[in-house]
Each structure stands twice: as C-alpha cells, then as structure tokens.
Image (cartoon, rainbow, N blue to C red; front, side, top):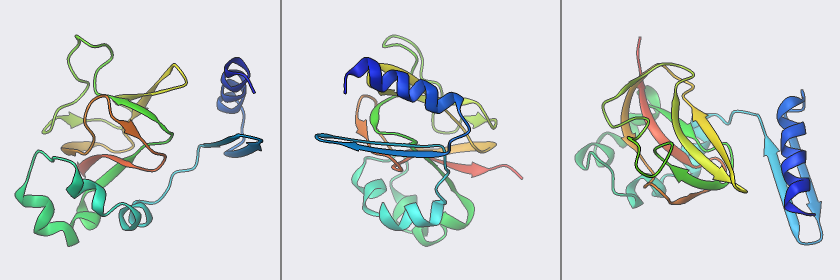
Length: 151
C-alpha cells in the first residue's frame, strides 16, 4: 500500500462515522480509532512512562501517584507519530506547565505520515505536567499531558 493510499484512507476514515478500523496487509498493520480509552486502563499500562520521562515536577509524581488518577486527567495520543509542542520550529509552544486550557484547545501536534494532526484537550483545566519531550515518537494511547480539571 502506497503512502498516498494510506493518506486517502485516513481522510475517508476521519470523514466517516466509523469509529475504529484495523487493516492488516503483508507487511503493514494500520489501526485507526476515534474511540477514547479510559484513563485508568491506560494508567495501569503506562505507569513506568511518566517516571521515565523527565517531568517538570519531580517530587509530586512519586509521592501522590496513587491519587493522580482520581483528580488528574491524562490526554492520550490518539495515534502513533512524532510529538511537537509548537506549530513550527521557531514558534512558541501551544501550552506550558501551568497553562489553563479550555476543552477543544490545541495542546500539541502529532506528525503521522507527514500529516500534522492537532491534538485538542478533552478537558478544561490546568496543565500539570507534559509527559513527552518535543520531537519524540509517541505510541497510540501513550499519555502526553496531565491536566487538573477545573470544577
């Protein structure tokens, strides 16, 4: 399958009512999903990841880690790709630790197959931690941000 065909398939998928698509060919496996994975399931699968990345708050993730799922919300990567904090190399990042975000506000970009996909916040609240470094590859379902929801 050629890149142009994959891009066309993704465009069709995005415009359709289909929520999940898995395509397996000889040497290609493509998984597209619009489903939101619940935070507790992903937190259990990715517990080592937040501590493996250099967090902006070093003391908090270690001590109150058992309380995090109750009040902090994870923004998960909806696809595999490369994580970018800003719209272009010289531009300011979309958000910083401490930024207040609205639901639907762009938090970052994930580049997948030379397409730039804006990742929006599912929550209204304050960015507590950015779990991925700029330019690093991310996996589907990987936590990207921790947000403390506003009440």
